[in-house]
Length: 278
Image (cartoon, rainbow, N blue to C red; front, top):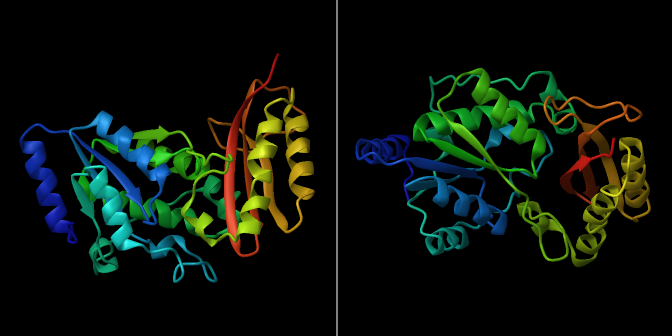
């Protein structure tokens, strides 16, 4: 385990002097098989794999779960040892955001929609930490899950717009056997809430049979609204290339259907790429 930025940078510099490629998996800990899929893909792509665990305060808003976010350091370290990760980078807040270091990153208009509308400033915080961690680690590849579709879009956009020498690699959502997308926040769910949360993957699976976006959205809304205790934040279709919300009644070949719901105090997101007959 490495805890300092300078130590991490020195290790990577040594690897690169030997001609090794580096893949980076940023996490906030509470690791699960979704993270395992990212690490597996990283191992396929590069000679060396770095995983960070850093609960980023900048992406939590007032009243969100920063203080209670799951922290399982010993279990996470065992998880990474089993997968033979080369280095765990586990910095403090002062190492990531040292006094005098200014990290600028703005998510722009897309960052103010959907997750950004419900969590103001969230994506600015995400982009700042990704930019800072990548500056420390200098990876060739950085891997992100497709479950956080808006985050993936914004990180990829930032990297392309700023010409950062990193390839962003998306990895498909990993699901539990019952279909629920794996998330560290699933640990907050009671048994009853978890059973109710299954309405999300069921609704998305039903949406795949729809022939129009309006039909798909209607199916999802109806299914989620029928589940007691589940509160919808948004159900929408977005353009996969721009993440702009699509007109439900426009003829389309494809769309990304995005969903956010709450069960008690737990917020869950999911999505599905839909293709429509023409």
